[in-house]
Image 1 (cartoon, one colour):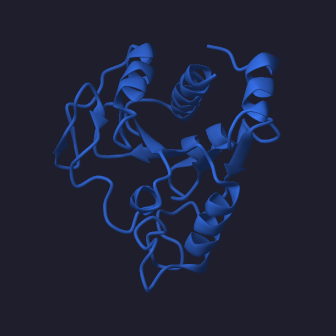
Image 2 (cartoon, one colour):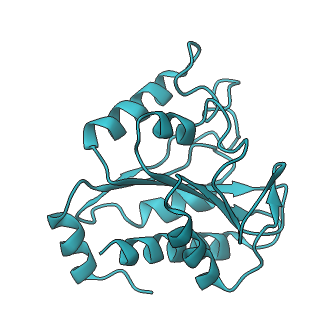
Image 3 (cartoon, one colour):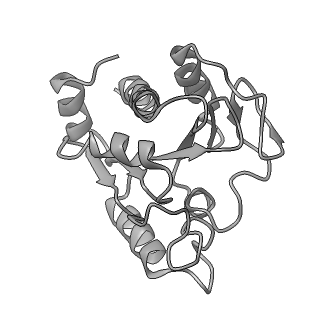
Length: 193
């Protein structure tokens, strides 16, 4: 599916923007690269290059495990503030997983059918489970994911719909992982308009 001028203009004239975030973990470059492909598109706000260290941790702390906690990093507070200020209709977080060979996602309740359709459109193996949670056609809606302290959990507390896509680090090269993220984002954007 192609992101084009028509989609961009529809997104720009409807309710709040879509926020796409990548690069929370510095060792997950595909999501960051994919997110940056949407910079400058109308109706989309990109938050990228959050963690430029090349490592999972930032200042010794996992930057996606302390949102809404007393020991949150300043960058986590900044991200939440920016998202809340935007009043988005949805947040799409792009991550990578080095513990599986398959693609999966977790999302806000009510979004599972759209997310399942996006995953199916890839025609790649979908995870049957991820980090201890069973998936339904690659999608986790209720389980221990999203973990406490994650952006996704913080967004749920604020009733901001979100989806997190996870691509497998070991199964695909960087270019292919970027392409998977872009295809998933495009599918959701086209489904919204």
